[in-house]
Length: 331
Ligand code: ATP
Ligand code: LTN
Image 1 (cartoon, protein in one colour):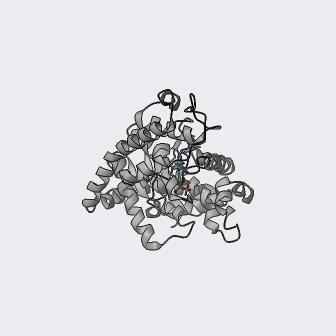
Image 2: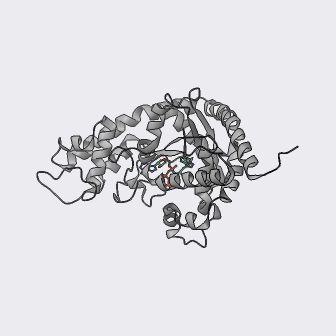
Image 3: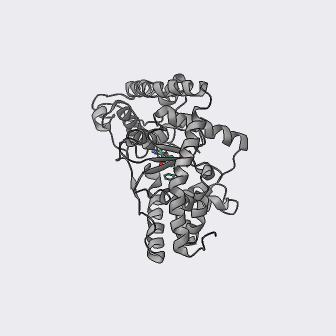
């Protein structure tokens, strides 16, 4: 199993409930590789000092949510150069047309225009395919927004195998069910997914937000004007804001959103309970994060150990791929 997260540090509830929380359980059931995709983070402008600091912050946060470096393999993408090398072989497998159809590229270039976009933003999904294929992953747990990238990865693996002989395992996405964390919405704009690159910070609950900030963001969440009996119901198409709050409260307390809805008739109490459940859910993560950051060297050690383990696997797969396309082995 392999999955990735951009180490931009501002890890939010969407990342946690859509992906990270599941990884913690999965690490005991699968041979897991978790990659902090720092090279992917370079596809948009970033301050170097901030990227460096956020990469370590994110490593600590992944340890704080419960990833155990002795159980799973946690590493930084840039520490394993096989990722960029395989990415090149896969760029020579992918077509311009299929990359142009990626909705994330379209969304991320909608504002600034395609002309100014970095080429890396265009080829981003190919590097992601390399991340996955290097580890022979057959299961890739991600949020719903990554469905298309996973389809591309499967297509590239199958095309490569057809062209050059069986080289890669064809992976499958493991996406949470609808209403169970697949797509957490922005609290201010409940028709858009909660995202690191959101316009307003008020709509995004960060894992390291203090309780007061979480309460204020949830209390100000956009709902709708409906009142009276039946206003609190789970109906994502008609009531995106309310449904998102029901989903959040459900995920924090281990219940389905429709089950939660049955207990409320007004938005105020729903918001208050959602806020306190989220604060309680994040409390141990934040506590562990504070402990970890007070202990220098823990994350560094985990990443060093992870890079060695990842490199050992990735180098074998890369060798297979190089050989398949006809590159001469270095004498
Ligand atoms: P951006 O929105 O700026 O592209 P991101 O918030 O999607 O960034 P990533 O690091 O790219 O963050 O994603 C890490 C994981 O979190 C991925 O598996 C992704 O599918 C999942 N994820 C991100 N946002 C959500 C969301 N709103 N709901 C559920 N899962 C999400
Ligand atoms: N593209 C993903 C992050 C990502 C990833 C991966 C996820 C990079 N490489 C490999 C799963 C597997 C995103 O934007 N959320």
